Length: 174
Image (cartoon, rainbow, N blue to C red):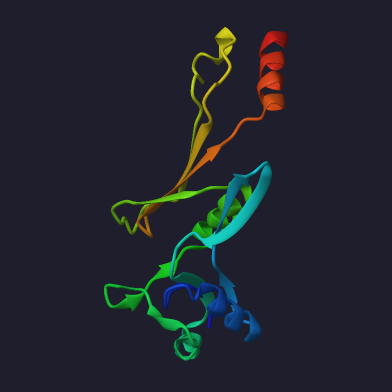
């Protein structure tokens, strides 16, 4: 049997416990974490929270579905049209990339589109005016659209002073 990615629903605030039990049983799983960066009295604090509360992705074959339901903290699989939802590989890969690269992610619901394509969209302010020597003042917005799950994940990429100055030097050299 070939393994596929499924989405399971957990009890509230039990994602970490379910992930620990799945890992202990050597079942491949993925719970995307949102790194929330806060500054408190000149100290940078990072807290990890689940990006999708009460959801965990598991990579199993159809035979192992019964084993997952017996794990403490698991309520059930997420179903669509009477069958457990199968998550495409590219969704997991792009979620892994997006959650490792960006901090302070925001999650927004959209309409579900079962045949939609997972897209990564980057919006750069003043991009059309970049040839005129204008430097982006605002942060750039990165969006990961996941129509099969019905979500858009957004991140604001902050520019450092070094990046702004290196952008200006590249433009002046041209």
